[in-house]
Amino acid sequence: MNTGRIVRLAERDRPEVRFVLDSEMRSALAGDTVLTAMLASGHALRSSEFGPEPRAGFCLMGACQDCWVWQEEGPRLRACSTPVIEGMRLRTTPPESWP
Amino acid sequence: MSDASSPRIVIVGAGPAGIRAAATLVAAGFHPVVIDEGHRAGGQIYRRPPDGFRMPKQLYGSETVKARVLHALFDRLAGERRLTHRAGSSVIAAHDGRLHVLGEGGVQVIGYDRLILATGASDRVVPVPGWHSAGVYSLGAAQIALKAQGVALGRRIVLIGSGPLLTLVGAQLLKAGADVAAVLDTSSWRQQMRGFSGLAARPIVALRGLVLRARLGGRYHAGVTLEQIEADASGVTAMRWRDAVGRERLTPCDMIGVGWHLRAETHLADLIGCAFAYDEQWRQWLPKTDEIGRAGNGVYLAGDGTRLLGADGAEIAGRLAAAACLTDLGRPTPSASADLRKLARLERFATGLARAFPWPDAMARAITNDAIVCRCENVSAGAIRESVERCGGEANRVKSLSRVGMGRCQGRYCQLAAVELIAAQAGCTPEDVGRFRGQAPARPAPIGAFLREG
View (spheres, rainbow over the protein chains, first blue to last red):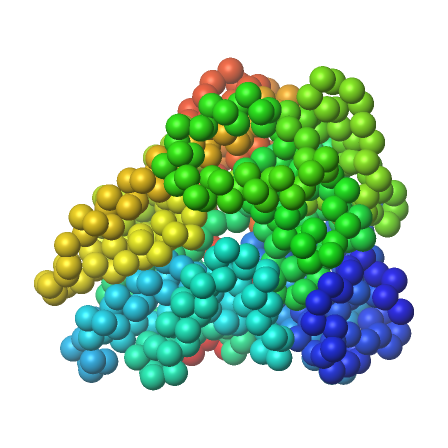
């Protein structure tokens, strides 16, 4: 199942956490950031608003703001500095209701 | 001592400088408030994984003891309630004795009488064509991923840039079992030798660097030219570069780490009104202080956010800034002369680093017109040059016209290269170009966070 961008090198025996990404159930490990969780099974966090390319974060220290991702209920979060939580519902694209 | 008559002292940042400043103030009987974006104290250099991870002691390498001492010191002071730790909180605005702090519950105003800014630094980067592709990260990001999450950000990794972090991150990734395909240094061996006399100020540190370099073996190449990051629709596929004798090389990879030493994080110092001076050695604008970190108006600066001396220098500067604060409050403070001597030695070493692993300003100036300079809004080098032709070479006019530096990182990752580009186009120096004005909020903040302000 580890087909994403990220490779786990250590600390692999943590409890599993399940979350929803683009309507699909995914699993991560407790203590993962949202960025780690999403990139452990995927290749992008979002699309650039100013070009065709996908984005996957850049600085991982809350400075570059490249890793903001959508939640199904609307508000965005910074994936590099937010821990993933059981039952989180995330999207790589804005919700359909977004103007 | 935290009664109403006691001055309110706030420290921003809980890295080595912030922790030492806090400990110094606690020892003098004060109860500082420490505001930090991290969930656990340590800063970026001594970043800790979340609870539940075993302490990955091998990841700090030779710095394990220093990291543990600082973590334990801070945890003890916080546990004994001798300081207030506001974790996971960002100062997004600062003015006239008030800080706007964004945390989980929204924006809160925290007042201060004395303010110590220990905001640290981030990677200094030069745009390489294709660097906006998914899978390109800062060198610091590669190290944070390893230390705080136990992961590599790709299956096959190429590191590019120059400076101590380039070698260190390469060696740390290798040791952890990652596949590092190449470590590409834009500084030539001859250039690196020019830093020798400065680097000799810390012979053990310099030697350790050489040992780490040796571990990289044939993966390490000095004096390279970085041509292009190749990418397809899902992200990075290869690094195209030339070796020291000009041979074209293509290294397949899915992750690239990039960085040329550090850029001081000065946004809050700017918002609070500190004076700045252009620093030729680091080719960036740095806030001005006296030798122990006094910036005036009850504001003190410590660590890489004001002088790029690394973690050891930050510990000393944190102590000194707190001592300056105590002196200004009329409290007795120990003599600073021993710490100042240590800082002078670190300063000589830093000069050696700056000389051995220089910022490649010529590369920034020559970046091709179609290359992206601002990753936030995909502003190209061509658009920046065109703006200079239309409105001249002043940083903020070019910013307004081209939107470089107006994206959500607020110029943190494009400003230094953009200023070199503008200077080259306008035929002036980077100092003449000036610097982008800092604007609040220093971090993006949802409107809702302000509505709950109370």
